[in-house]
Length: 585
Image 1: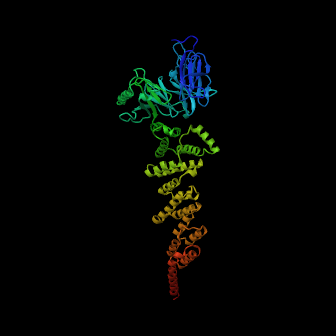
Image 2 (image 1 turned 90 degrees about the vertical axis):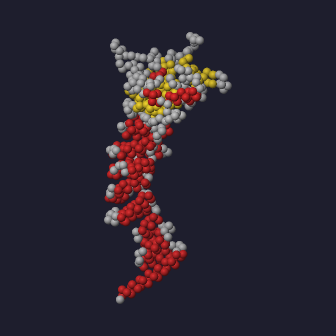
Image 3 (image 1 turned 45 degrees about the horizontal axis):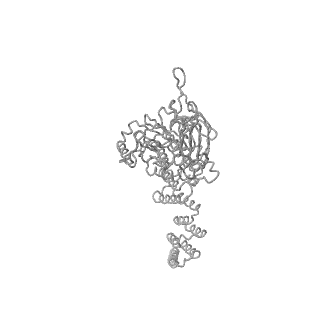
């Protein structure tokens, strides 16, 4: 029966989760909020919020936002946010501009009524917005909703009057229902233009289909309508078929996915990432191909910033992998060093902010990072930069060593500027040494080692030691080899690796210096036999006798091998006496 004149007309209802309210009824006169009784057999009225002449309402479960429309053109809006933590929070009133930028023959501007399908509550980067699809002016307008104010945030041209909206990973996707292309807008880009050029839609068969589809910039993966029967009903052609019948019908459609995608569909778009085909009764999941987006973006700096804001678990491809591959491509294509410096600064800035969250001073840096780059969700580690970018480029030899060295030096400057030198792995310094030696820049390498440009590490010291030994064996004319021995020794000494220092002294034949270090630092890793064997190679009785006497006095347990070397003392003394007699004649 029709409602009585005294009772308000019911526009709809929805369930909420709060401490005091479970059910909200929306009438033309306002809101009625009810609490479900413990017996689950009745409702208790908790609160009534009166409003005049409510035309329609829009409620979004994902945003917990209720929008009420009033006024002759339904463009006077009022919002309520209903959350378990805050309860029912009333937002300020605001008006939606519904006038047209064009005028009729009489000079009057068209002013259509605002429809529920023109309004979408969305959350982008944890910020609450009201999205207005202005088909008359072919624009999408975002209104930022605060507790005490409503402000127009951004207006995007869409160049189409027939639109739908989806939100994927905090990106606003505007679907052109006629041409089946999608415009991707990122509010952190601070631009009224799409982040990339409009992208085509590609339909992928679901996992239960006979074959798998291919990826594309904007993908829609199908799900059978029965899987979402709790949320959507197919009303036009009768949805009384069994689940198996629905699945068979969907499979028959997906067997010719090309014909399905080429036919104009009656899609109903939701502010989330789902699209309903009303005629067929299928729900599609909207996904993004980050690879295609990264390739399509002409500004690599914006690409890296964009990928840092992506959620890893929401995409097939890990955004961090795309960041690393983008940087590799930049180096391969010999991008300008200033541009590389900006990208490296961004990588280091984000890494420093994520690595120092525990300190209060760095928390401020995290806030600054959010303002500068948006919500940062991934951070590239310095080790990943070394192994996945520079080491791969050096191994594949796909970039000239000279430019690779310049890129590595630029990266090192960014690392030092953001105080991240302790996070640089020793493998990076060793790689830089390899590149310098491969292009015969020994003088520059010697300068870097002299000013301690590299961080001390056992791996780098071993690299310098091997380099010196190889140079001494194969390139005896190379003037830097002796200095590399000294650089390696000094680095071992600064690292307090005295055993390696002593071993290097023995290799160089500096036996007495090795004995002095062995005594001063109480080393036991080098056996007396090694020192005595090295002394024998000198073929000098005085040197061998001095070493033997040192070991006999200061090395514990030398008695076990003293007998073996005492015979050498007698033989060498006899030889020395014979040589002295021969020289006297």
